[in-house]
Length: 480
Image: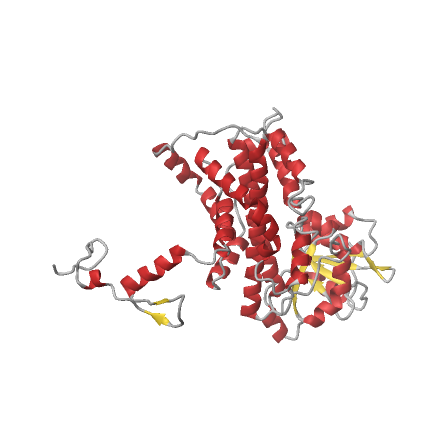
C-alpha cells in the first residue's frame, strides 16, 4: 500500500473515508489537473483492507496515495501539502475553529456516479479555506451547460450543509411527484412499457415557452424504474414480470427531509409539498396498519375511465407545476434560513450549482437560475412561470379533480403543490378570515382588519348571553 513519511508532502488534498463516495471522489479529483499538473490525492481510512482494495483496483493512478489503519494517520497528514486540506465528514465547525482548525462544511450530491464523474458541491464555512481548495473542487465538480462548475461558496457556518439539506428536501418532493405520476398512469391501465415510452417523450416535449421542460435526471430514472423487469440479480426471477410490481411499498428515509421541514415550519415558511413528501414516506412505512385498515374497511369502488391524450397533457402540466412549486418552496426555505442564520447566501449562485451533477439536475434549473439572476429579489419563483400558470393551470386542476373522483390514487404532492400555488397567489383567503374570528370568539386572540391598522376584538352577543350550546365533552360545565 502506498504511504509517505511525514516529511514527504506530495498531495494537494486528502480524503478521509475510502467507501463508495470517498473513493470515487478521490478518483474524480485524481483525473483532474491545475495549470497542467495532475492533482495528487491522499486517501485515508481506518479499514486498511478497504484502502488497499481501492489502490489495487486503480493501480494505474500514480497520483493516488493510500493510508490505512490508525497507525497510518500521521503519515496521511504528513502527505498533504501545506496548508493541509482534507475532505472529512464532520459537523462541528465552531469547536474545530476554536482549536485553530479552519473548517469548510461541504455537501456533495450526485451519488457514487456523481462523485466519480463530477458531482455538485455545496461548501460553506471559512472563506479562506474555500480560497485554498476552490481550484480543486471546481475542477472535480460537474459543469453546467454554460461551462460554470456546479460549486460555489454558499456562506459562513453551516451554509453548505443547509443548502444540501434543502436540496434533499426538494429531492424528496420531486421523487414523490414522479411516483404519483406513475400511480396515476397505473390506475388508468397504462402498462410499464407504455409508461416508459410516454415519459421518455416528455424529455423533449415543449412546455409553454420551453423545449424539454421536464427533462431531468429524476425523469430519467423514473423511465428506468417503470419498465425494468424482475431478475435473479434483484432477488427475484427472470419471468418477465415488472420489478416495480414486486417491490415492497415502503419508502425509507435518512432524516434530511424531516429535518428540513421541521426547520421550515419553525421558521414559519410554508412548504406543503416538502411536508407532503415526508408524510407520504411515513405513511408508506406503516404497511401493517394499512393492511389491517383495508381489511376492516373497503373504500368505495373506483369508476376509472379510459386514458386519453387529453389526460396525458393534463398530467404533464400537473407534474410540471408540482415540481416548480416544490422548487419555489425549497428556495423560500433557503432564503429564510439565510436570514435566520446570516449565512451570506447568494441564492442565484447557489441555484446555478443545481444544474448538473446533482440529483435535482434538469432543464428547469436553467430558467430558474436566469429568473433569480435577472431579479435576485424575485418574490416567489412561481412568478417567473406566470405565462405558463395563466394558460395551463386549469389542466392541472382538471387532472387532480378527475383522478381523485375516478380512482383511489394517492397524490399528496400533487394536491399540496396545487394548494400552494392557489393560496400564494390569492389576494384574499376567506378561510383565514373565518379562522381569525373563530380564535377571537373562544380565546379573545384578536384580529387585524383590512380597512385600518391595529389589532381588534369583537363582541359576540350570543355567546355572552349564554344562547350558544356548549357541550360538556369539550368545555367546563356552564352551571345551567
